[in-house]
Image (cartoon, rainbow over all chains, first blue to last red; front, top):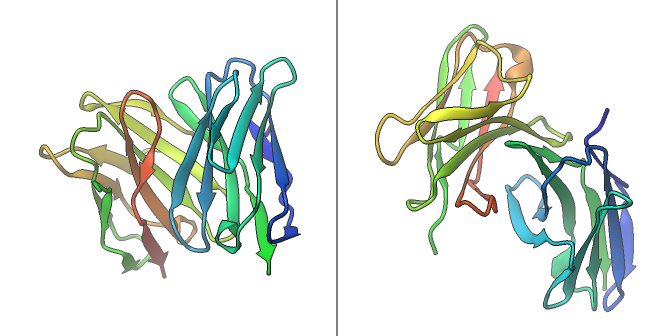
Length: 108
Length: 112
């Protein structure tokens, strides 16, 4: 059973486009969620935590839907520098579960 | 900006040897973690450490693995008797109580 599942993509979008990623989780007891980005052969970098009320950081908006057990990430006005793999992460107890990641390529 | 550091960046070892991977977490963080990422696969949780003891470990973290915080700054992962399948990138991370983790650049372990 996969704790956290993501569509691996790849998503190829033109510069300026809006793109949305979804992630589902299987354990309703999971208490916190996060989005990270990972560039090729680099460490994951925290993008944002995800709150039920929804939270926004510049061009990025994250949302948690506990009833449907999914998390979303919306990127507006995508830039070339947004090209990366986006990782959905859930915390259950004291253990973190990473999704396999969704690959995004922003095309000029 | 404070950051997590890891040494070495690349470690090559022979099967059956012991390796110690080192990490210096961000100084005011309280929680420390080790993860591994086999090439092309997802990041996998190994262990979390708080208040000088393991707070959680995954099924991967068996008896060949151990962690230690030998002083106020270092956090180490020891792998006894390495196997070929231990070849992976090992990431250390640290966090405050918010659980927002900051990762180090990783140590690439190659077991031959």
